[in-house]
Picture 1 (cartoon, rainbow, N blue to C red):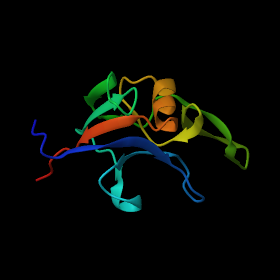
Picture 2: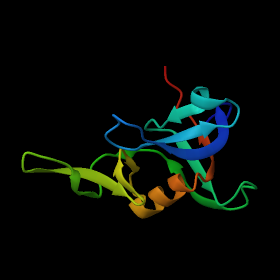
Picture 3: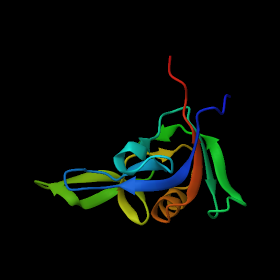
Length: 125
């Protein structure tokens, strides 16, 4: 895999009014604000580190998002007596995607702590 598209930054999670679920993302250090906000695509290579010095890899793998794992009833979104299921990745009660095979609690923790990371985007034709 070519690393000429390797980005350095940190994990982040975006939620705002009107956004039903928290969006997991990567913030590229070389770009400010929304210009550096990157969502994950299946096939991206993600490395998550313990600290800014990037001395220890906490997780590394190819992203394949699972949108069904760890769904639980969420009374906040219950309407007309119907319970809505949303993905949970504590501390987030709503999550839009958890990498396959990753512990949802770990995903929530590294996103909320905005852990340092590198991302190699999958090259699209």
